[in-house]
Image 1 (cartoon, rainbow, N blue to C red):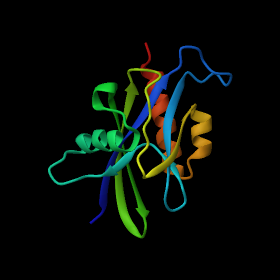
Image 2: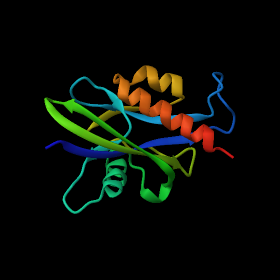
Image 3: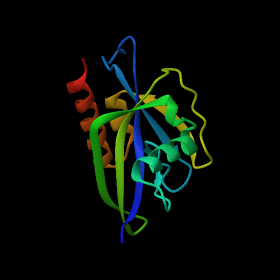
Image 4: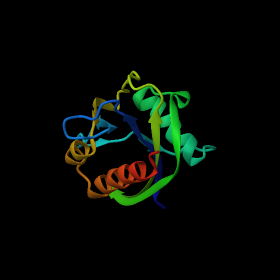
Length: 147
């Protein structure tokens, strides 16, 4: 049976686009263990939790961002399936926008650094192709649904 994890692709909208013309920045956390990879906050589903509850709990635990500080974006849900530490794993992600551009990040012991990055920079930092694709699809979804 595959391990199941859930997380949020957290983003913020820049008031003034950056030099590279990016108006959306993604939050990536650097793991403290293994290969020190960069991902959005995520974690394993605990008994009695639904997937979205897991994603919100893990975001609070790993980045210090409360559910009330986020807006979950309807219509985007991405499921990744891969092998981690020799076992099959399923991770489900939703898009979530921070309500406060300057929200404080408080990392748990599981992470050693964080960055807010535009799409191109974020895709350079993440090491796994399926995560790059997920960020690109999330960005495309946000750009296509922007008012």
